[in-house]
Image (tube, rainbow, N blue to C red; front, side, top):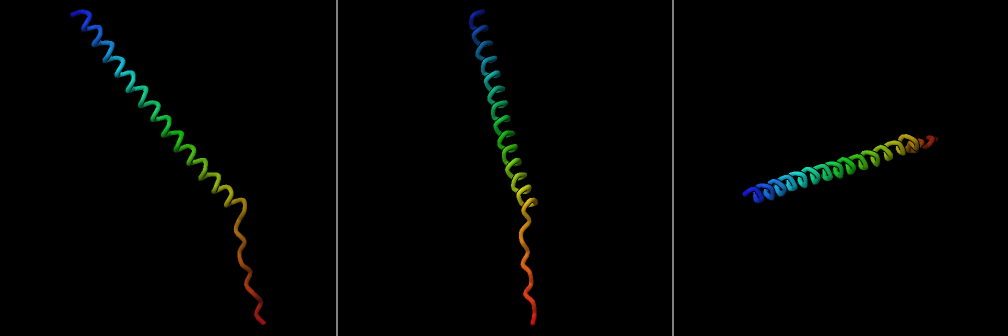
Length: 62
C-alpha cells in the first residue's frame, strides 16, 4: 500500500507540474505573438508618420 501511495503521489505531482509548465509555455508563446504583432503595427505607424502621403495640387484655372 505504501508503494502504491508513493507511485500515485509521483504521478499526480508529475501531471500537475506538466500542466503548469504547459500553461506557462503557451502563455509565453501568446505574449510573444502579441508583442510581435504590436511591434509590426508600431513600425507601420512610424513609416506612415515619417513619409506623409503627397497631396495632389489643384490645377490652375485659366
